[in-house]
Length: 85
Image 1 (cartoon, one colour):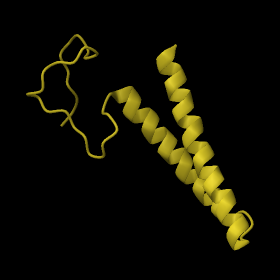
Image 2: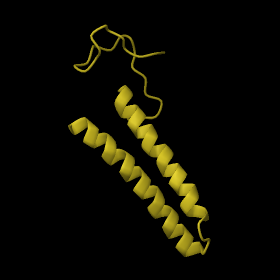
Image 3: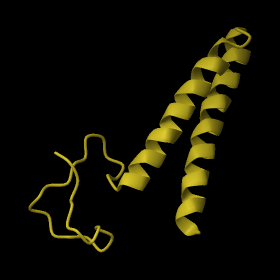
Image 4: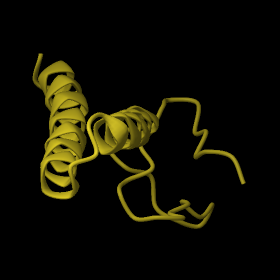
């Protein structure tokens, strides 16, 4: 249940931050829905990227890739697959 809650919170938080930034920029620059739409999609993309990284086990660093020489982690699959190159 904890992992599912983490996924939901990350998706909603990224979306809320994107919408919040869009609303603030629209109010400040008086551009009705322009920045709201742009940052809604950017927040959605960021949320899905966070969910993908959490589910696939890649971590949060950009460009992070596990090396084949790394010791096995506790949550590695039993067949020893350490990810693609």
